[in-house]
Image (cartoon, rainbow, N blue to C red; front, side):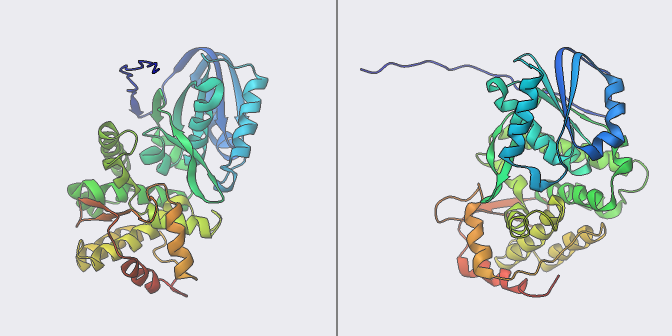
Length: 351
């Protein structure tokens, strides 16, 4: 006997992304704001002045990628249960990419899923992490290997929060902007080469362009079955670097920058990029003081760690490589010897 459950339905998970001054946010039920002490000290009062709800609770967690764990998620859930939130409650993720990832994941778990909104306060989270609904935490095997796709109800990107951003955090966000330009938009990359993001309204334009690019990709491939994987350019290498350094040496965007350099060298090796294009990307990243080299100590160990990446399956490693500037190729057909040849050039004391 076979009994079928017919669950065919259309779900509209569309949501607005507001870029500009943070507006008044009104909510009828209970709200929990997830943040960290640093962001709370700098910007929490600004948010509270604009957030109006029946009850507002603040949950703070330690700052840093090393706290992006299931243990931290459980502590957040405990606080939410203490405050008796229900399925009609709202979670506000107020901070950088770590807060956004954990806030979204917590919202997906609480009472089997509640709504959340993203209010990103770092450049990296504004141009990338807050958009697209990818949530999760790290474990000892790698980055974001535990998580869920859970789209926010809205994203509010207020560039004024970036005024207190340290220069390293700024550069980490630029790396994600460059990533999207290299893979999807050659004219935007050329614009980035010609404009300083520290001057005038250039940063606002770059944020909008990066968000527009990512939104278009997410619309086509929400669950990362194909095209969206291209947004992981630089991440395949970068995640290994983060894993090896226990998330303590580099910011995420810095690891991605090094990963892009490695990916570009591999792309050049197999004929996808010219040496001039490789140099252009490296020069643009270098303008924002991003690290461009990493001293690989054990090539074999580095290579084996690739297999923990979500994009890889069984014995095939998936690489996201630029095809020139403005296009991208996703491939799992690269010989191990070719990859290791590139890794060997980073071995030792290049950093």
